[in-house]
Structure formats: structure tokens, C-alpha cells
Length: 447
View 1 (cartoon, rainbow, N blue to C red):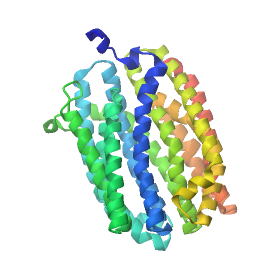
View 2 (cartoon, one colour; view 1 turned 180 degrees about the vertical axis):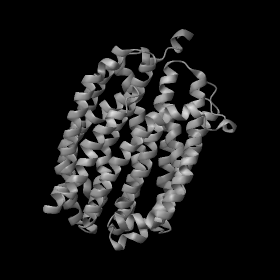
View 3 (tube, one colour; view 1 turned 180 degrees about the horizontal axis):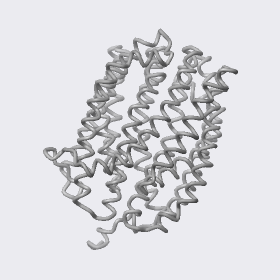
View 4 (spheres, rainbow, N blue to C red; view 1 turned 45 degrees about the vertical axis):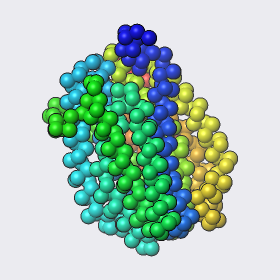
């Protein structure tokens, strides 16, 4: 292969379906390993500590973590989109300013959120109607988690930046290492030394530190346009403005998603530890679907971002169609398999028959409707890659977040059963999917 072939940007020039898959699979595998160590946490806690600890790690704590990390991930998406567009346009100076600004923002944000989380955790848990017997373990778990949140933020921003320029393999390798470290520490701290929830949290923090160091080292030793110089990490005003213009709406969108989930979690907490434990396990199975769809979402955001920067409109539209088709096909197979094997899957995490029964009913109600979310993930990702974030934010706020809040406050109050609470998800997905399809069809000519 000659030099001119090597210098070709395959995302803007190569065969679309092949490049989407080349980009998708490392992200999928990376998400899988990220989810794997969370799942191993749940398995070890469920079998070696008990269902109270299982509920502590996966109930209110999981929703709070999702809110915080999701908000920052949304903010950092502004960095990845901006860098993808500058990279597609071959603007080296803007890429480097954006890179150093993103790192500086991650450090500042982690300090503020970490301290706030440590202080506010007990109050938030009480506001969420967390069962009294879960408060102590949940507080310990979250405080250790917030103490190490710098590493989580650094890894998320670093890996997002690498993916933005087409390197989805390096984050995968670091996640595999992180996963192995976490599993080993889980076994040592929880099974051998019987440290319970504290051990699980410590294992997560240490493994995240390893991944943060690895991704930072990758950027530091880079000899190309994406080189990180630690002494130059600072805020560049124009770069920050560009990143926040895209990242803030996405971050607030994620916050509203998480807040609606927290309200639903608070409602489910009233049904006791069995329901909370079942919902915790459901969250791990649920994540198997999300990791596929979110991997396609990240892929199409980068794909659209670089092609938007290169002014290749027709390639954008074609890639969106192909990505939708691939995501729908894979998701349909997953839905069928998980629906049929739901009781067996819950039995992997716990031997408690009531928890298995409740969880299986939850999965049977929600799982067939997951295909609706494919349209939300792919179309919002495509719009985000083109820098269009305000209207998608409004659609998400109204179609999912506001609807779920009103649903819990209204329908659930008159008919307080678990199925009614959970049914808010498929209805909100349907509303949101329809709105995204209509808006994308309207705006596609602007790409």
C-alpha cells in the first residue's frame, strides 16, 4: 500500500457499511467489557454478599452514578463532535486546542462533582425513598465511587477523543485490561477478604485509574495531530465555547433521562428490597441491549461528524440508513433471545425465587419494545454529529423525561403497581421515536 492510500480517511472515503462495522465492533466490545466488570460486580455481590448488598450496588446507587457519569459523558460529546469535525477538515491547530481544553474541563469537573457527591450522597439516597436497610452500604459505595471519579472522567473523555478520529481499538484494549483488573480485585477483596460493598467500590475505582492512565499515555506519546502535552492542558475559550454549545444540550438531555429514571427508581423503592434487587439485575441485562445500540450511536455520530466536516452530504444520508438497518437487525435478534431465556438469565445473578419472578415479568414487559429506541439512538446521534443538538434535546425532554415524570405522578398514583411504573418506558420511546423520525426527515436536506 502506497502513502497516498494510507493517508485516505476511510470514514469519509471508504465503503460505508464496512467502515461502520470496523468502527462499531471495537466500540461494542469495549462497551461489553465495561459492562462485564459491572456485571461481575453484581454477580459477586449477589452470590457472596446477599440481596441487600445487590440492591445497594444496583438500585439507587446505580441511578445516581448514571446521572453523574451520563451528564459528563453528554458534555464530553461536545468535545468529540468538535474534534471529529476539525479532524475531518484537517484543522490541526483547532484539534489540539480542543484536546487540551477537554482534558482541563474533565479535571475541573471531576473535582467539583466528586466533592459534591461525597457530601450530598446520604441526602439524595433519602430523597429517593431508598429502603433504610440499604442506606449504609449505598452511602459507602457511592462515596468511594465519587472519590475516584476523576479517573472515570479522564477515561471517558480520552477514549471519546480517540474514537472521534477513528481509533476505536485503543479504548477497547484499555477496557479489557480494566475489566481484568476489576474482576481480579473483586474476587480478592469481596470473596477472599469479605469486604462487601466497600470492596466492590474500591475495585472499580482502582481499575478505572488504570484505564485513565493508559488512555492518557496513548495521547501523550502520540506523534500525530492528536498529541497531548500535559504542560499545555488548559482552557481555550473559543474551544470551550464550541464544545459546550454541543455538549451542554446533550448533557442536559442525559440529566433529564437520568432524573426520570431516578423518579421511577424512587417509585420502585416503595415496593421493597425484592423489587429493587430485581430491578438491579434487570439493569444489567438491559445494558446488553443498550451497549449494542449505543455503539451504533457513537459510530454514526463520528461518521456524520467527519463527513459533515468534509462536506459530504450524500454520504451522511446513506450512512444513517445503513446504520439504522444494522442496529435494527442485531437488536431484533437480541430481543428474541433475551425474551425467551429471561428466567434463566435472572437465575444467573440470584437464587431468590421472588426476585427472579419479579425481574422476569419486568423484562417480558419492556424487552419487545426496545426496537423503538433504535430510531432515537441513531437519529439523535446523526443530528448530534452535524452539530444539531437543541431540537433533539427538546424532543427528548418532552417525549421521554417530562412524560415519564407526569406518568409516575399521575397514572402510578391512581394505580400503584410495578407494571404501571415500568410501562412508562415503551410509551415514551414510541413518542420520542416518532418525533425524531419526523424531525430528521425535515432537516436532512440541511446536512
